[in-house]
Image (cartoon, rainbow, N blue to C red; front, side, top):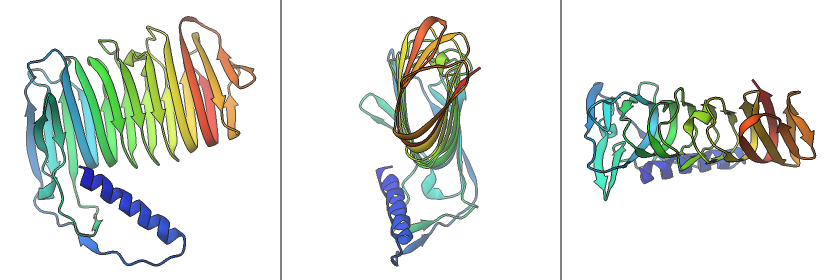
Amino acid sequence: MSRVLALLSLILLALATLACGLTINLPMDEINTGPTQIEEIHVPKPDAEVADLSLNFAAGKMELRPGAQDALVSGTATYNVQDLKPKIKTEGEKIVIETGDLEIEGIPKFGKDVKNDWDFMLSDMPIRLSIDAGAYQGDLELGGLSLKSLEIDDGAADTRLKFTEPNKVEMETLRYVTGASNIKLSNLANANFASMIFRGGAGNYSLDFSGDLRQDAVVTIEAGMSQVEIIVPEGVSARVIFKGSLANVDASQEWQKSGDTYIMPGSGPTLTINVDMGAGNLKLVAR
């Protein structure tokens, strides 16, 4: 997995160099496709109170949702490059599902016909879940699970993450780090976290804190030149503390401004959001 992520970094470096007007010659490596294969994935539940699960996904499309009845993970992996065949292994007490290693000498030439899709269901047993991904499309429905923690680190992603149903246990940490991506996070209050960290580069990010806010929660958002939207339901006690001299803030009338702090009066637990933006636009919405 580290080889693939390093390769993606090399591609970005090459593009940046070209943008500066320099000419470089990099070897191209054609990715050859073959017959489409569909592989059944079945990972038994571990003999532990909490499962430690890591999904390492290089590129393609990944869908996650609840529904694994007699397993920790069940579903299918569909691919047409043999070296993308997923691997399942154990590292200590951690269970890892990862994309197979591509042996690449130069810059990969991915055609539109390359297919790499994961469609997985997860168990509702307590899980510490981490996702490490590159350039991919993600459709992640994590509501109704029992996530003790969630950590996501991805590259140029187009991802939709939602918690349609409340998380069944208190989440210790929720951490999301991304790059130049389009990210939409919905019903975040249902994740039942006390602390959340979101870090982004130059992208479009929407964070919707709808759902059942069961405890005071602190959120830290750090972003570069980005478009960031924060949505909080009307009636929720919330405050946004903003830092960013080159960024613009557009707040709806429900938010009361006091210096660099935006307050929405409400009842129940309090949602505190610290935003640090280098440049771009921050939009505060009440629904």
